[in-house]
Image (cartoon, rainbow, N blue to C red; front, side, top):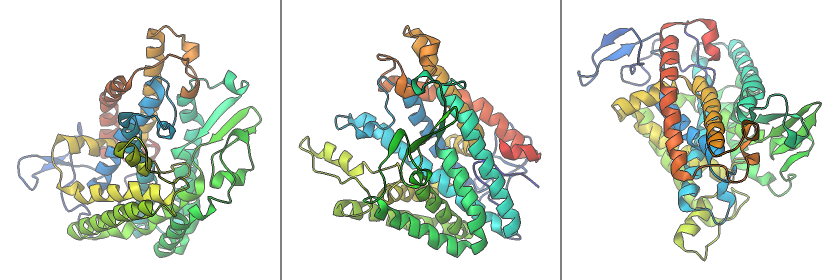
Length: 439
C-alpha cells in the first residue's frame, strides 16, 4: 500500500470507481514506469504507484507552495522586511500585491489537508483514520518546533533578543498538525457533521472580535487566548510565539473534510461544482466587504490617495486570525483554479504537479535555502554571520535587497529546489516504504 504525503493524507478514489481526475496521471520526472498515450496521443505519461492521486489537487498545491516561497524569501532577504507590509499605509502597490497574492497559501494547505482526509474515509475505518490523523498531526507539530523554528532563526541554542531563550515559532505546520488532532476525533461524527461544524466556526468566529483579548506578542498570555489571537509565552528556556491562532484553522480543516465528496464526483460535474462554489465565495467576499459590516475586524476606507489606495484598503483583510472575508477572498479563487486544473497541459503544469506531490520536502528545504541566501547577502553587504543568525525582524539596519532582488532570489530558490523535489517525487512514486509518509 502506497503511503501518503505528510502535509496531506493520500487522495484515493473509492474502491471500484473510475479515475478521480478523469485523465491519466501526469509524469513524475525521473520515474521509470509504464507509459500509456494521453488524450492527445503525443505526450506520454507515467503510471506510478501513486496514480490514485488527483492531479487537480496536486497542481493547486504545487502552485500555492511556489507562491508561498515568495513570501518567505521576502522575509529573509528584503530590505526593512516586516512580516506584514500590508499594515503600512505607505506600502507600494508592488509590495502590497507581492504579499497579498501569498495569502492564498495557508487556507489552501489547511483546506486540502481536510479534503484529503475526507477522501480516505472510503478505504479506512474511523478508528484507523483517527489514528492516522493523530500521528501525522503530532509529527507536523514536532517538525514545526524543531526543524522549522531552527530554519527561521539559525540559532537553535537561543537568541540574545529574547534573553538567550530558544525561540519556537508556531506557524502553518502547527495549524495543520493541531487541526488534524481535532479532526482525528471529529471525523467519527461523519462528513456532514464536520462540514456543519466547520461552517459554523468559519462563518461565526468573527463574532469574537469585539470581546476576545487582543494579540499579545511576545508577552505571555493564557493559552486559551491563542485560539483567536497571536500570543507569546515562556516555558523554561523556550520563548514560544503562536503566530497562527488555531480556532479558524480548525474550521477550515473541518470544511475541507466535509467537502471531500466534491472530489469523488465525475470530472465534469466536479469541475462545474468547484467553479460554482468558487464564484459564489468570491462574490460573497466582494458583497460582504463592500457592506463593511461583518466578517473582518478591520474596516476598509476610501483613501485620499485615490482608487489604488482604496482598493488596497478593500483587499487588506485579517490573516491572524484568518477572518471570514480573508477565507472567502482566498478559497474562492483557489476553487476556481482547481476547477480548471484538469484542462491545463504542458511542462508548467507537470512541474507544479511534481512540486505538489512533495510539499513537505519543498516546505522544509525552502526555509533553509531562503535563510541561507539571507546570510550570504548579509555577508556580501558587510554584516557578520552572527548578525544574520536571527529572525528577519532583527536583521541589521540597512541589510537587504529591493523587490526586484527578492523576485530574483525567489526564482533561484525554486530552480535550486527542483532537483531535490524531482528526486523525492520519483522515489515516492515507485516505493511504498512507511517512512516515506514522513517526507
